[in-house]
Length: 425
Image 1 (spheres, one colour):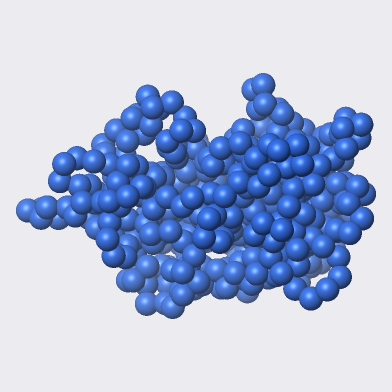
Image 2: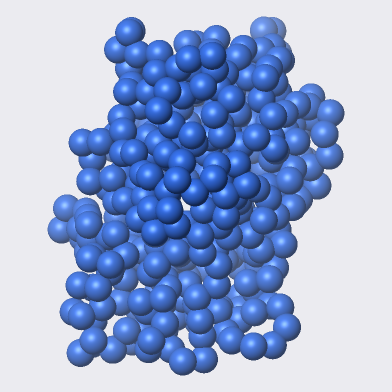
């Protein structure tokens, strides 16, 4: 196996049935992006050693992430370096009452097989997608691969985490952008899971929650699938600041936004916490103002040594970057705004570079790793991203995506991840 994985293929004769099953039973209501089918014909077949390694890394990363988040509470002089909207930063003052044990913490860490082993690209900390794909999709695909089985259940892990905080019969507010089917399908998966366990699912928009004495009115728990930075765009009369200072058990509590920012590595060394796993797995990340003296941008150039933040100081000449780098928006999602040469038109890359140069506080530069594609039985090659979920710091399933290019964006295909049965991990 390559990196402990191979690609299996759903039989051609079975694929129409499989795709139909995925759409109607795995909550994949949007199986197309433009002309692209996003339901892969393939399956990731992973050995137990690779699965165990990713799980151990994810759990260590989750523990370190929660320490960083808590270290940032009450420190606006550090959090303002993360590229967060001003209104959201102001609301973050309400995080002083945050208690980890009163809430449910969901994260997804994205790993990529490379020429040198595994690389970590980021954590989806705030509203990680892929829950149905990690919870239901593997069971549908497993019937064609008898030696492999689903591994983990993200929706089930969330249910178990809420059981300790909200008794069956309670109401769980499923907060999302209600006019978008791709958001509703995530919430429907969780709503069905909770209702089958005796809870009431309340599907609602983010501006519909009201608050009384730091409690959400009408809800015993909150699961939010609406990005926190979007809250600042709600109407002025929406009491969205209540999310930051509520005693209602929440997934995810707004403390998650600290780690959602790709600029967090720029202040690692100022947090006073030990994060060896993050520092060993994440590619070197620097401030975009670390431009070379000849104006070359980080998307085409790298630096010697490992210094996480290189702001251009007044009167100081920025160090020149050498090698290959990519730009990332601080609050980007689904691969948006990440220019990788050869995967998008040069004109779009130049537009991104101009945006990063105009507003460097909203971007970072990260050293480019070399994604290693996996070959399917028909000879086609696909680049792979494995999202490792954790719930309250414990491993909770895998979400796979494949793409013909190293860029994982909205056109990437969802692919189930199955792990070999039996044996030690």
